[in-house]
Length: 395
Image 1 (tube, rainbow, N blue to C red):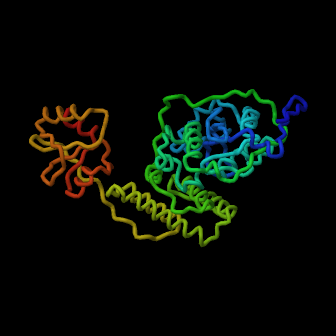
Image 2 (image 1 turned 90 degrees about the vertical axis):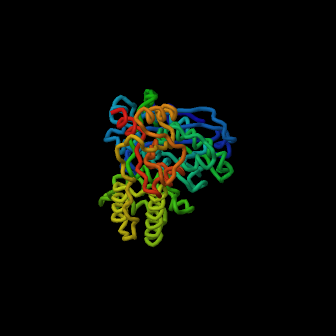
Image 3 (image 1 turned 180 degrees about the vertical axis):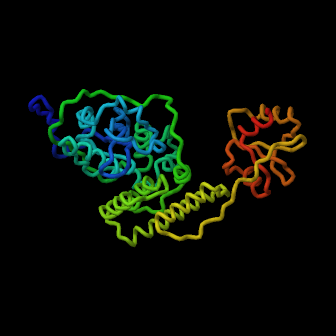
């Protein structure tokens, strides 16, 4: 790599020829304020691997975006977290050193590469991602689902370093390492920075997911075409608040145009997206009021008038009575043995299975898709969460 010092700044010139790939692979993940070109990075991680996928270096930092942090309910980054974080120009030299001459890789590489390029462009530096490796294109699934498919642990999804680590492992597991690729290049004069970092605090409480994110995290994208996959990933962001305003609509249209997606293909993608959301909602045999409202809002945003499933609420939760039989499903903060003791002290009769004669099912999560929960819903048996059960019987 060639470094030129001009007026106290560093000019990074990319190497040319086949030697550019000798540095291996830079797996990048960014968390952002949104999905448009006016949005900014709030967290970045780079996991460097050799050509066999073995991790050789890692880097992460929060970034002060000089604006609102955007959807904290998705990425978990709050304004207080970035208040003392470096701006991109302060870490640009370090990031350039990590990605220049390496093959750029990411889950939805076009998204991450676009944001890295935009940040470099804002400080007058050019970033060419070359021909990246993309695990979204290779698997056709969201990162959490792809990791489940290949048995890869994904801790704290939407924390940049954890997503980048998982993507690095996924590259090998899904065979993406064998895809055609070429190295990225950074050129231009990089302002001198302090190269400081500020990482997200360990143990920070994850932000609560929106109703849409809770549902779509289980949805497999209804396409294998890379352009459609990238567009649907952008659509997830726009629909997070169940509203697509005029600015978002225009931006999504630009994304579709840049990806070469026709109006007919886009309409069809919208229909299949909604169908996939409906399928995910119905998977647990429950359609809550919030889920029904969400599906209605999505359909309205996409200009679709489908036959939505009817509202099917949770079986009525009632206060347990002495003499009732009660069954438990799922694992919670209270052990099963303790739950049985609590039930017996309250005059309830613990049962090991769900039958039509059961009076109450207590579930760690009332949305559970366990066999016991499905039977209880089919038989119309009341359900309580474990927390509510313990609170009621201990009264």
